[in-house]
Length: 319
Image (cartoon, rainbow, N blue to C red; front, side):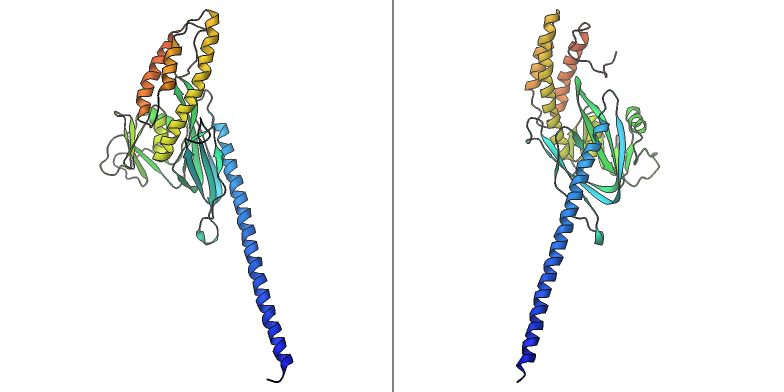
């Protein structure tokens, strides 16, 4: 007790241990933050790279294109859709993350904006390989490319589909989409064009023009059928409104073209009908059916115009 030097040294050791421990904690925290920041940067860059991969899938005059991307680890893509941002076109966002140590997914990177594409998918797509394909969407003239994306973790078992649907799937060489025989059990998501009892996860009601999914009706026309099958209901409805907005912007360009071709002894009668479609509001996918009834009318008017006086040309016209 009388040896104060010994006591002073023990306090010095205690102080050094406390300070050293504090510095170690700070160092570990700084290292973890650095790693987290680095991960976030990589994940954000990966999301941006994925968006750029959609560019080669723009169809032009093609009926569709397909591709895939594989990751070294189990990965997730997070999609959100906003029809009230970036007006008038709206936008989507994509985030990326992957599994880290402990078999847990890391925090996703920053949102990357998708302003000029229409990606139809579930809200979260998880897997090591992502399959994606495109189909053109026409409303008279070509409006946009529909981009569908799904992963290797899901198999779609399609029952009773017509020849056109089967030909499209086989022509694009789409993976994880199979057409089982009636007696064949299929472990996956059952997509039913014809009823197979209570095993249907997704029902295509062709007579009503809608896909029944998660107890919600997603109305479709033409190749929007693929979008309805592979998309969440929120994503689908949002993109339908975004596509109508794009139709409106393109319609404005064609209305200007009508004024120009009038100077070439053309008397196009399409203008008033196109103005009607501009004013037509698509609040949900059900409105698409009536909208496309009107589209057929302007298509017929435009197709009857003499050479050089057509406002637009549609490769899908049936001669």
